[in-house]
Structure formats: structure tokens, C-alpha cells
Image 1 (cartoon, rainbow, N blue to C red):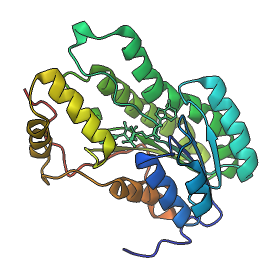
Image 2: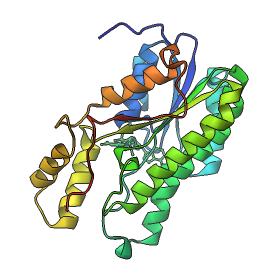
Image 3: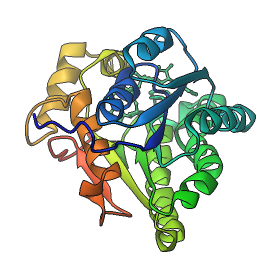
Image 4: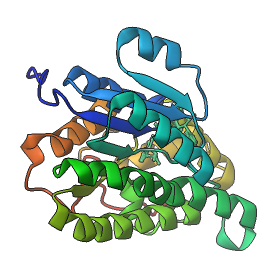
Length: 263
Ligand SMILES: NC(=O)c1ccc[n+]([C@@H]2O[C@H](COP(=O)([O-])OP(=O)(O)OC[C@H]3O[C@@H](n4cnc5c(N)ncnc54)[C@H](O)[C@@H]3O)[C@@H](O)[C@H]2O)c1
């Protein structure tokens, strides 16, 4: 891999839900490229290590589905960083698994709040700071579920499609002020979360988890899951000068998903 250290020297970034998973990998990658990174998460278990290793310059507990907590976090983070150039809206939960007519409205609401409303709340707080730099960038982490209908995962698919609409609209509102906005659509990412998602789907469809995993792999032209680092690499490209003319785009990091319909 090339040496990207210095690519983001002097830049200040927020990564939401950066305490573990893909968000932690993004925080690590942006820090390694020279950015100072603030991270929030509902779970602070990883914060001490991230601060000790320098993967995060500032950490705070915040639930991004709650506007007041978002406002408080951005106030503290921008004070600590001395401004903001980059926002990565990474937070997102898998949501419930099951047919629409049996969906619990409370679970629907929670999925939309965490996966879609949070991106609006965070952007609303971040935009004045980023616009002030005249050259910042926002990345929304969507999903390959934003390219297709996704049977049994309706609130997740609806939220991620919503995120694409928000991305394109923000790119149009902010482009004239020098700010770029893009969305990344990861496919199935190796890690704990995809194991939980596959277990829930196996349960809901009454089949073995190995069968679900085989199905997931067959849906993808490259016949493999992706790694967290693959997603973090695309974030780095988009927020750096390498992506200087890229805005309003929805970029798959998924080995090319051909379908999400398995039954
Ligand atoms: N893992 C995958 O296969 C996959 C595939 C496509 C898209 N994505 C998307 O990538 C993003 C990150 O996924 P991940 O696999 O790292 O998720 P994850 O389930 O591993 O969770 C990562 C972090 O999110 C935090 N979190 C959850 N709800 C939060 C909230 N309301 N406020 C703040 N923090 C919160 C958790 O505490 C955790 O530390 C999500 O938007 C997800 O939808 C993931």
C-alpha cells in the first residue's frame, strides 16, 4: 500500500459511531493520513485505546439519533479540533428483519432515526464549520441496500435510499460553497455485525447461517465480502485532494452487488 501520511495534514474530521467497526477503521485511516479526528459513539469501550494510539484526538459518548446529544457533541468536538473540514456520517444499525406487515413501528422509527435522521442532525451541526473552510467534504456511509429493494429489511433499505437523496441534495446546496458530498455503499463487510445480520436472517427465514452466507457471496460478482479497510480507503480518497472533483456520487465498495433478493 502507498504511503498516504500527510495527505490530510492540517485537516480536522468527525467520524460518527467511530468507537468500533467500520467507523473505527475510518478514524484510524484518516488519522494515519494526518487528520485530527473526533469520534462519537453510544459505546465508549474503545475510546481509551483510540486516544492512546492517536487514532482519535477527541472522543465522546453521543447517540446520533438524538439531536440535543449531536449538538452537544459537535460543540465540544469543534472546540477541541479548532474547526471542521470533514464529516463522515458512518452511524447506522441493521434494523429489524421480517415482513413489512409484521414490522414493529417502534423498530421502524428507530432504524430511520439512527440511519437517516442522524445524518441530517450531524450535517446540520457540521455545515457552518465546514463551509467556513471553503473546501470541506462530507461522506455518508449508505449500503448496497441503496441500489436495490431489500426483502425483509424494509426500514434499512428505506433509510439508506433516503441517505442517497440527502447526499445528492446536500451536494447541490453545498457545491457552490466549495463543499463536496458523496455516499459510499459498502457490501457485506467482514466482521461481527455481518455475523449478527446473517444470524437474524437465518432465523427469520428458518435456514442455516451457512446457507445465508453462501447466498450473500453469490450475490456479488467478485464472490467475496469486503474488508473495513476497503471502505476506509474510499473515504480517504473522497475527502482528500485525490477526490477534488468528485461530488454528488454514490460509490459502491462491494465487489459489485448483482441482487439482494434471495428468495
Ligand atoms: N457491516 C456491514 O456489513 C455493512 C454493510 C453495508 C453498510 N454498512 C454501514 O456501515 C456503517 C457502519 O457499520 P458497522 O458494521 O461498523 O456497524 P456496527 O454494528 O459494527 O456498529 C459500529 C458502531 O456504531 C455504534 N452505534 C450504534 N448506534 C449508534 C448511535 N445511535 N449513535 C452513535 N453510535 C452508534 C456502535 O456502538 C458501534 O461502536 C453503518 O452505517 C452500516 O449501515 C455496514
